Length: 147
Image (cartoon, rainbow, N blue to C red; front, side, top):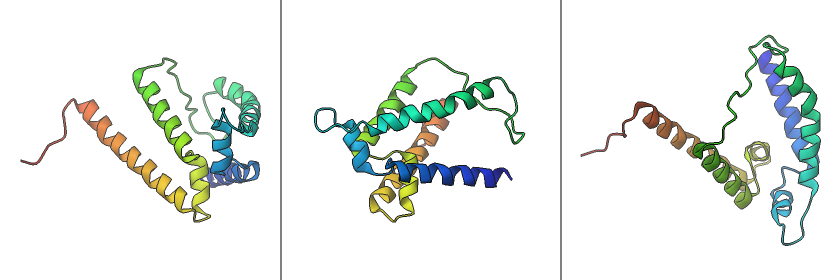
């Protein structure tokens, strides 16, 4: 049941991205073009999403179990550190260059957009590099180099 609800939620989110135009890289780049012909529609979608999320988030903070019985997993850290700032800059830079972020890129894979495939390949590569760097950071050792 949880997988079905997860699939249904993802499909609904993807349809929302398509219907709102937020899976269109030109729309996103138009929002980021502050010096040109700025398109405020992405800001309106963001404000709408925040409004829709306010009540469920307030409910989630007061409960330890999710609606389907799983443990509620909300972030607990509130500090801003170098890793958060660096990751935000990388995410924002990639978003600005490609006009895509992970959700819309995955939606566009179904439409066989080659740009989405390149973006997702770069995203997966970044995730793999992160995992290697995290393993190195946790163990405190550097990866072995061939002699």
